[in-house]
Length: 257
Ligand code: GDP
Ligand code: MN
Ligand code: MN
Image (cartoon, rainbow, N blue to C red; front, side, top):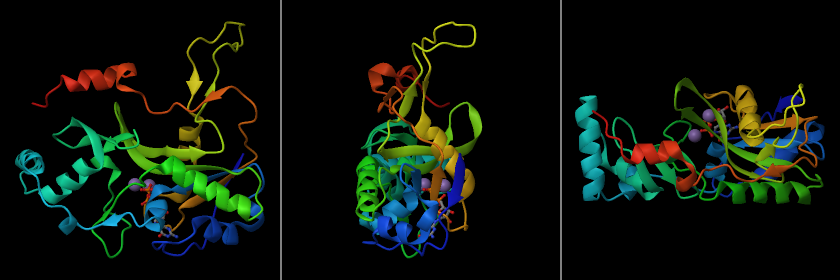
C-alpha cells in the first residue's frame, strides 16, 4: 500500500469543486480502485460551512455552559461558541471540562468538531452537514472525470478516550464499507474469530493523517493505492447507537467534580 499526498491544492473557497481540483493535481497518482481521503476542513470550506460568532444569539443554556466552563478554566468563555456547538449537536454528553457532543450525523466528538484553525476570514468552521453525502459527491465527480470506482473518505482529527494524543478518523465515506467483518474467519490456530470487526475507514483515515499533518502543510487530500477492500465481508456501521454504547450510557449518569 502506498500513500501519496495530493500537492499544490489552493486555499479552498465556497463553491469549489473538490473532485475537479483534486483530479487536476492527482494525475496518474490516482488510479481506478484507489481510496482518496479528504480532510473535512476543505470539504467544509467548499460547502461554505464557515460561520461567525456573531451568527449565534446566546440561549440561556449556552450561557450556563459558558459560565461553568469559564469558572473551571478561570477565564471567560464565549457563550456564542457554546451556542454554535449546541446548534450542531443532538446530544450533550459532557459539559465540563469540555463539550463532548453527538453531531447531527451521529459522530461523537469535542465541540461538535467545530474548528478555529485553518479558517481564514471567519471565526468558525463547522463540520460538513452529511459527510458521507459529501464523500459520495466527490466520488461521483471523480467518476465524471474518468476515474472508476475511487472510494472516498472524509476525515477529521479527534481526541480519543483512555489515550493521550489525537488521530485521524473517518466521519464520512462512500464507495467502500466502513468496516471489515472478520467474524467467522479463523486465527492461526484454527480458532474462529467471534467479535473482530475492523474499522478500515478509521485506519485509512489515521494513516492518511500522517501525510496531511495538522498545521500549515497544505495537504488535505491523500491517495491510498494498492489497497482495496475487495469483496470481503463488511458493514457500514461506524457510529454506535445509544442502546449499543455502554460508555455513552455510563456518561449519562456521570458528573464532573
Ligand atoms: P481537519 O483534520 O479536517 O480538521 O483539517 P486540518 O486543519 O488538520 O488540516 C488538514 C490538512 O489540510 C493540513 O495539511 C492543512 O494545512 C491542510 N489545509 C487546510 N485547509 C486547506 C486549504 O484550504 N487548502 C489547502 N491546500 N490545504 C488546506
Ligand atoms: Mn477538524
Ligand atoms: Mn487534522
